[in-house]
Image 1 (cartoon, rainbow, N blue to C red):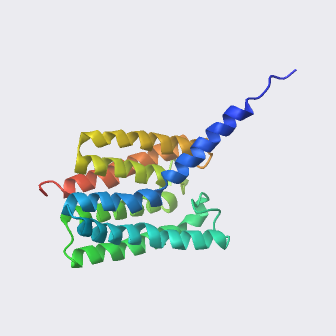
Image 2: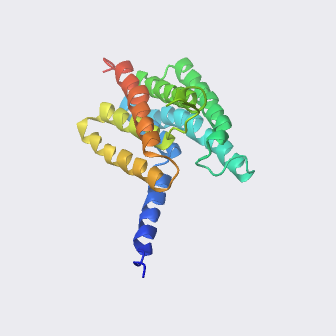
Image 3: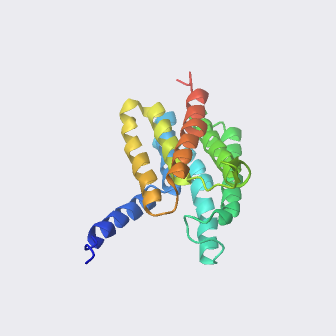
Length: 215
């Protein structure tokens, strides 16, 4: 006689993981973080909206339009693009669109923090693209690094740099989203760990260095 399986517990766990994956998705961070940094940089609603929306639209909205349209046409599996082969166009769309946003910020004389934020995001995308499609990891060329973990980790560092140590509490969200990606089977533990490291080192650290002495 086999022992009964706790399907209810597993179902609840999966629902929590799915909720965390959606609520803490990269596009959510990339839309909200620029507004928070825009407020910190300008201390005005107008400035926060103007600067924040430039980064948010070019770094999140435009790429998500491309991703969702591609998913509906069957070019990749979902708006999370969990299949590695389907990530080429989304990566290119993100890098190209955000590159345009950076140009607008620089030409428009945006605050240093906003340019630093956009550049850190751009660097994270480029490194993630290289790891996913160019660099051999563990002897294997092509590795599906977790963008959920990378964006969340970078955002946690950037918010902490901008607003102080209390924002280290955001690291709880980083752990939660990393766990959710593994729980759902979309990534392995090494992949979310690598994503977290990329977010910290390529996203958060450069932002901190670029904003030293900004105030």
